Image (cartoon, rainbow, N blue to C red):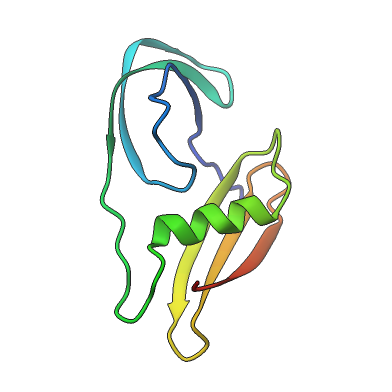
Length: 111
């Protein structure tokens, strides 16, 4: 079964958005239909990030740390799953490369 993930390189995004944050984006004008698509941000809203009970980090902070631990330059990655294990005080993030479909599990200490 072939998998497909929507992806857009968004230009003119606000500088205060942090990698790992979940956002809603409204585009200004049209979108190039390449893969990934290319469009200019018209409006951007950062969605609240939750922290499970007992966790120090939020999901966004854990994802940011996971992405900083691996080399992903020029790759389109999706966060397939993000979970927190209170017993280990650790986050587990499964990242998937949309080109090779390889999955990488990155564990992040909740500090």
